[in-house]
Image (cartoon, rainbow, N blue to C red):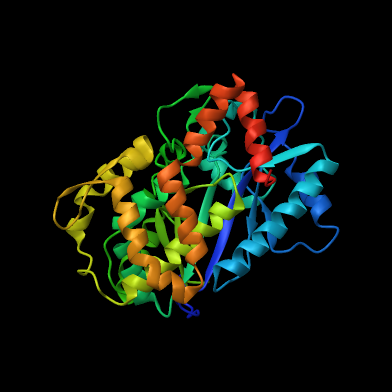
Length: 372
């Protein structure tokens, strides 16, 4: 079917989606409890939206549309408190983190929903291995051309969001030496990675999307697992590279950092994006996944090597006036502190060393999500 028109939305509005882990409090492994939890949550109004994800050991929460940090973090905290209360009734722990540190993909159960079954039949074991947990951030755009401009302009900052959100150092019981191992699982899907370099919506809709649909490879925008993708039905772009943080406060901070960057970029103060900017994209993405804040970037325009940590700090300082106008100052200050003190991946490794077990690390993540 043809791609729907790009719906106009209020520029720089934002919404957050968080995929969360459902943990058995007896052994700290994932538990297939989403049907029970969703049934319980459906018995009274929920302060946002909650939906199933591809396997029964995870759920997704969605915020409403917000304009500033204060409103967003308040709603995310209310959602968190509601989830924690429901989880306690079912003896389920709920936490963030991009991967569960020791779950086995073969133990997972596909949630009974037509699209999830279709994905499972197409991708085989990759569907169960997709029991990984990410944060998606939507930013409102006035039109499709602005959406594609932002999509390509933000490619230079994708490593910032990977490093700041990284919370998936352990997989299958082992330290992967990556700060964000989650994105390695995403990269296994054929329609993942970077979006094609198309700069206006008419070309994207009538040429690229139409051709891709004609091949039979894709049916809708949901079939693209790009790091950033346009969402025409919402009138947004969607950043998809973040691991789910361990706290909703960090999730809100990441959202307003993206909001501030989009405000800055829309002033066209930087050199326009070009296809050659992507020459270093995969290298920079790898550096952020592997080394986190200690990674090294190659600037896409000058090819200068940069410290990722210093580049984030420089950019956060540059965003201060934009954040002040948007009510995002507290969120940017939170990320400044993260850049100095370390990411959630660093915290999880500390907890593993402190407790001596992966189970202790999961318990620490549960307590951190609760705000304790």
